[in-house]
Image 1 (cartoon, protein in one colour):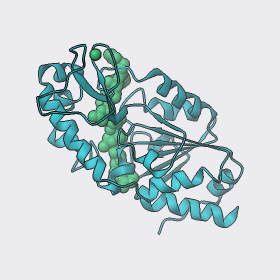
Image 2: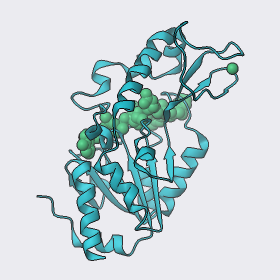
Image 3: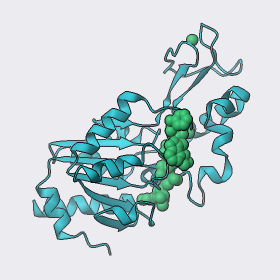
Length: 245
Ligand code: BV8
Ligand code: ZN
């Protein structure tokens, strides 16, 4: 039975700006595979074969097949208790910000308002030539959809070797610098520059709280580590907080 430390609850009681930095692990309990775990996507599919621009230009059909497969899973998924708790906490703290590596839209579907999507969103699409957005359902009946300028349409996610959307990264960085409590939930914290935000928050004096089923790269640099499922631990922290506020 996980005990939530009094000092963390006290810190939360004296805090206004809370940030949740999340990765694939927070969506695992919603039935969305993580990347590196045993059943992780990267065990079955090679990121260099699918999640980068050259791979898309080499074989756009194959890359779209993979993203449409993941899209179906995301559409059938529902936000879990971890996503829902973060959304509820918006009504208890002055400033709650989500900074996510996930492209699955589940934080938004859970009701979170202030979200920075560092690696894009799987529901979005745009033309590789003129960058025009195509966020409606795409028609694949005559192969990979094309823009009226003739350009191929690609998923609105950030691939390896691609820069992060500046507004999203700068928004995440600002949130990390102003955070009083910075939760790191369900991420292996190995992909950069996203993972660097943990150290940005730490350097800005935030209390770092890690929630993960196992130790990670950052476990030795955090103030509190809770090892277990995000869908169980986050509601527990919030219950304890509400009992003592
Ligand atoms: C870039 C979108 C500039 C697409 C993704 C510095 C050092 C080393 C390498 C680099 C560096 N800087 C840049 C690089 C290269 C690269 C990188 O970081 N490589 C890594 C692999 C070493 N970074 C980039 O390419 C970035 N761009 O740097 O541009 C540039 C430009 C030109 C030339 C050079 C540089 C772009 C990276 C973004 C790539 N896109 N996603 C898609 O989704 O298809 S990354 C993708 O993988 C996710 O978004 C996420 O970021 C990452 C997966 O990590 P996690 O989400 O943490 O998932 P993971 O499975 O690893 O871990 C899950 C965790 O949850 C585990 O710890 C597990 O224990 C835990 N867990 C499981 N269940 C639960 C749980 N926890 C709690 N509860 C549970 N129930
Ligand atoms: Zn175009």
